[in-house]
Length: 101
Image (cartoon, rainbow, N blue to C red; front, side):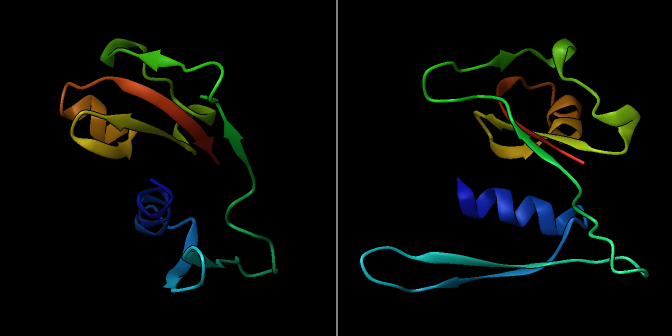
């Protein structure tokens, strides 16, 4: 799931790149942050919504807009991990993982 979230962040332009390092005992995901002209980060905030003790599920009609469309919501659906906008287009709901802006 972490790799799928990194892929979404790259597709949406929040990070520059990511790579998977094969480490022992587990693999490590190395993320390169993306910056604007004045050395300000593009990724200004990330809020985790679903937690192991309290899962948050939303239907298609309940998918939230983050900062009036300037951010994204990331969902885990039956079709895989995707943004809120992609889930809305595919008429799918799911577990609300986090907000990114």
